[in-house]
Structure formats: structure tokens, C-alpha cells
Length: 155
Image (cartoon, rainbow, N blue to C red; front, side):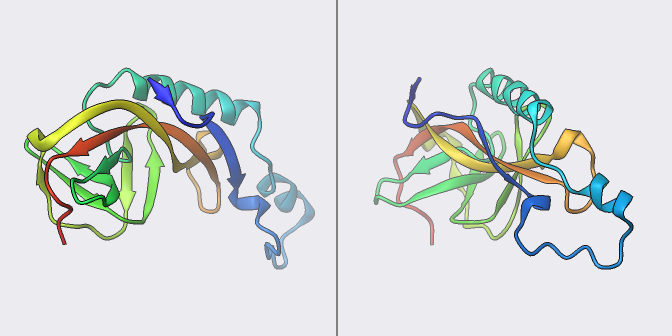
């Protein structure tokens, strides 16, 4: 695949947000909660990217380039249709697929999509060290497929 930018790469983490307010927490709690993305997070990211690469079908988070020039990301993909979104948040799952939070446009038939054989970095997040808890996100860019759609973008 033609990759337009080096990815995957980690771009940030929740606990690195400037001005983070820890309130009256103990020093031990602050040390536990404050982290920087590390080698383990990069391993998790690379594993998920590799799994994602092994799936040939459209996935949530892939880019869709419509016939009218609009570009959106896939939000919901099933056997017959794909829904897209112009914004939102994509979580990178263990198996390489994505899940989404945000608003949707109406669907387009899946058979109108064609793999362009290119990728583009798309932003995702996942849990630091796979620890599922609040304020524990690692943000990353992941190479996702780009699909062309023979229809105009739904409005």
C-alpha cells in the first residue's frame, strides 16, 4: 500500500494534558495516574495496526472519498451499507477494528466502495497499557485504507 505518512505513531495521552487538575489526590495516586505513552503502548499500537492490515474489508475509521469530492471516515460498516461521519472519536480495538462516538450521515451501499490501494493516517485512541479506566487514553495515528465511493456524499 502507498502510505502517505509514517504511522502508526503515538501523538499524546490524557495525563499529559497541560493544566491537568489532580485536586487533593495523594502523591502516590498522582504518580500512578500520570504517565507518558511508552514502549508497551507502542507495542499495543503496532499489534493493532498489523491486525487491521490483515482485514481486507472496509473498517470503522477508514476514509471514504465520495464522487462529489467530500471525504469522511467510515463510522458503521455492515454487510450491505456503510455510514460515515465528518468528525468524532474512534477507539482502536484489540482486533484492529474501530468503534466510534459521534454523529452520522445516512448510509451508502457498500458495493459502491472501491479500495484505492492507498492509506492515510487516521486519529484513534486506546487505553494506556489496556487499562480500562477514565482519563487513560493514548492518542495515535493509524494507517487506514482509503476507499472511493461512486456516489455523492449523503447530506
